[in-house]
Amino acid sequence: MTEQLVDTRRPKVLVVDDKQANRELLEGRLADLGYDVRE
Image (cartoon, rainbow, N blue to C red; front, top):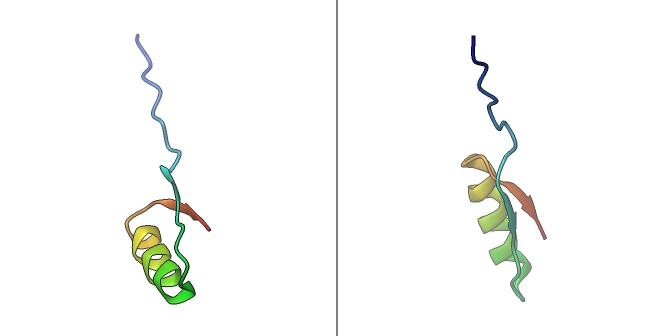
């Protein structure tokens, strides 16, 4: 019997922008898509 390992980690994204509103908008959208978002 062969077991397959499933990678359940979420992809990571670093969001960088001068404007906080842009960062918040992008962070929310990416998080909804399943990304682990950092500012």
